[in-house]
Every structure is written in structure tokens, then in C-alpha cells.
View 1: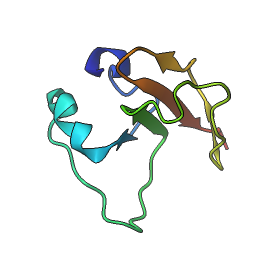
View 2: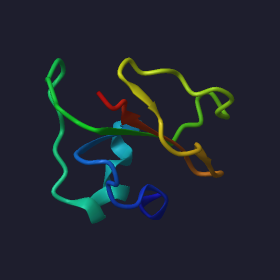
View 3: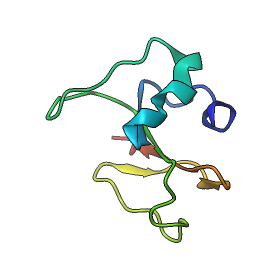
View 4: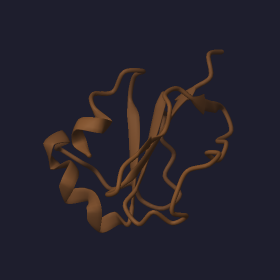
Length: 89
């Protein structure tokens, strides 16, 4: 999973992992920080990792206001990864 995620390429990023107990697989990127509910964060990239395959496959990734897909989704037997980048202003 860490290899598929790779380094941040568009500036500061947030990585969301579902379920949250999957975070230890990303310790290569330490330090990791939990964001409190309702926290405001400025970021240029949001990477969403789904370890539960729920839904089981990505057909059409959901939209995020102010962001666009910046790479094709990655699907493996172990996880799904969707990468969003902030739209240029």
C-alpha cells in the first residue's frame, strides 16, 4: 500500500484510511497525525485508502468539492486507492 501511495506529488496531503486501524501499514510515512473531527486543514492532495473494499470495487469515484482526480484509481485485492488534487485557482 505504501508503494502505491508513493510520495506527495502535489503539495501537502491528507491520507484517509478506512478502517483507521489500517494506519500502521503507513508508518513508513511517520510521523502520522490523527486529525480531530471537524479540524480544518489546508491541503493540495487527498488520498483515500479503503482496506475493506466497501463497496467492493471503484466504478466511479465520488467527487470532492474543490478537488479533481489526479491519478487513475488503484485497485488490488488488499486495498483501493483514490487520489484527489486541489483544482488550480
